[in-house]
Image 1 (cartoon, rainbow, N blue to C red):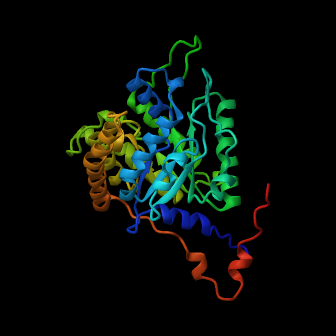
Image 2 (cartoon, rainbow, N blue to C red):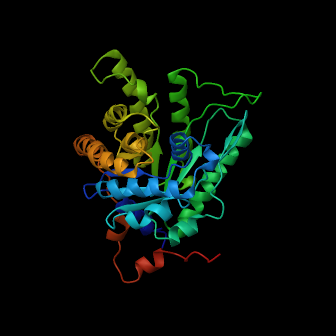
Length: 354
């Protein structure tokens, strides 16, 4: 039989989506950003931030907000010890593979996995999906682009082998200068938008095995014009529409990340994205960053999360229900089966143990 089933991937995506078919997910896998905040609040260097403080912060985020999202994104180093037991049973579980540290040079930026971590381990720990952040620029040096492409393709092969959904996060970045004392700024907004679209066009190819795309706004989220029907609005919407058309043509669902913008700025990003066909969001700082400013007073953090963080999620939920594109799993191959044993035969060989 030539049918290839990926029921694990479909079920994982279904677990991460809400009952009405939208992805309303919260990221708690940030490491550098939260460590920097804690260091600033305590007046210490980032290297001096205690493991216990990182764990406590992440635990509080999931404890207060986890019940109000369709899935949570955790990292193994801090979120697992702090927040896994606080993750509601009804919520999907998405787990980070990439290390927050990366190799940087004037030729481009290269990603790597968290040490001693793998797709197989993520599957074994009960996750519904693997999240992989990949820095990518189509104008980086050929060897850097090839390394990033190999990084994603190898991960995609492993996700197929273990039948677990791959959520790919793509980020454009500024080049480090040759002198090592600064970074080239991303030029005009249209230039960055072109780079964002180039990255999506590359990784929609089936060889990468991506199941869900987590994308940044093609234009700076902090400066998007009001959606008032004016020339600026229509010009900005065209970039989002092109992004949506690329994903739609590949048959891939997509969600937006918040990239550190404020909640209201992210709401505008989502209005543009939903008009272009987005299926939801996977955001962190736009939801809980303001509340985390109360650290190290965890009681104040919790109170603000209950008041403000939940209100942010309620606004996003209402917008998503009203304007987001629904996703549904594809079980067409099962409906076409006519005899006993077809599922067993179609599923092929089990992955070999390593």
